[in-house]
Image (tube, rainbow, N blue to C red; front, top):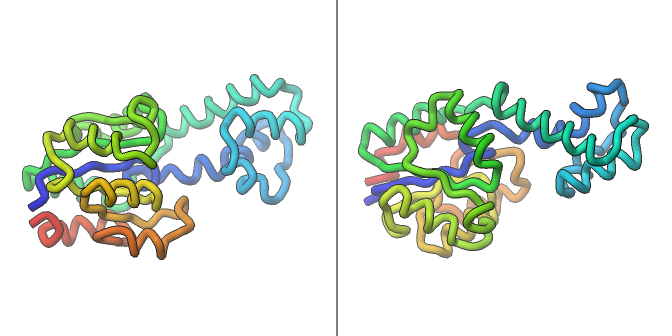
Length: 217
């Protein structure tokens, strides 16, 4: 029987893929510069620092790479603090789990401050016992972050379910003995592999909310 749950944030609880996919375009258009086709795909493969260097090198913007980097970070910060919305069914699922006595925590590769700001604004942070970040516990290719998040929720791997949208994170959690509930998100291109890896695979958290009793019992 499931006693606790761990939630990824970006792409699972929050519909945050758009800001990363549109980041370069948002920045350039704000300065009246037309982005080239395919810019998003190129930037998604780069760090923020390298992306800023690319924009400085290839576009006529009267700013240094460091100033561009600061501008990109402001766009991201504003998005989480003021714009980011929950994925469909997120509030319903969190409420359903809470009502059933399931203790919950968070595991994120994103910025902890911005994650907390978004979840606080959306009145969702109240459901969680703690937040484990990759900055502190390492990336999701290693199980430490999931083990730490389970401990925050007072659970063990064998009785904890991990909600994830990322294939590599789902594979790590599965190898560590967690049950995995996968959620479709446009940020993960390997949907068929994600489906094969996870114990459960659904298009939205709303579907999980409807079937949660069958999953946790």
